[in-house]
Image (tube, rainbow, N blue to C red; front, side):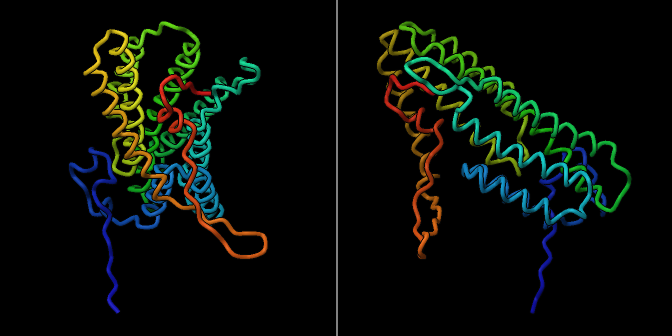
Length: 286
């Protein structure tokens, strides 16, 4: 039987370590790599509960692991819960008789602020780690956490924007161009802040979301100015991205076991954020 050993790719190290890698830095991290990639794959497919259960189970199985790895797993469980709340848009509250009686905007900011603090803790642990047996892993985890800090800040800014759009939904005249300018600023600020290959799905999802919202708002602004052909092109661009996004859910199947035996599979239900963006004009989040 032939045993193959896979060496870790240099894509898992910050640029500073790629310039002059030493033999110790090129040691493989297959187990941690597999866990990280599996977690972010599940997040990228919007399987938030599965991702959370996965890292919590790994945390129980890694009680003898280093402190920085344990801290990161705790932060990852928090990240999965935050992403679920964000995509379900529960922070916009529920409506009763046309009035909001349960607003959770502060809660979503609290969730992501707490997550940000947990990730900063991992960054600090990595920078002040004592010389040990896995410096390459500690540096990788610290590097990922630092980029995820930028991601949490981007999420908070997008949540603020959705709250503003939600409040403007009842008004007849909306300055869509102003909202587009805000989105462009968010994208420019964060587009290259969480670019690590392991975070590729997260970055791609963020890019798609911002692009779709921008195209839809731009379409609305163009229609209000009677620029129908540009509006049609903007709508087509948003529709194409939504179609590609929706295929993620069509390819997914979740297995449900029945009480008296047997099991069935059904497509994963898209989160509320996707359903709102794909809704006909006039829809509003919440």
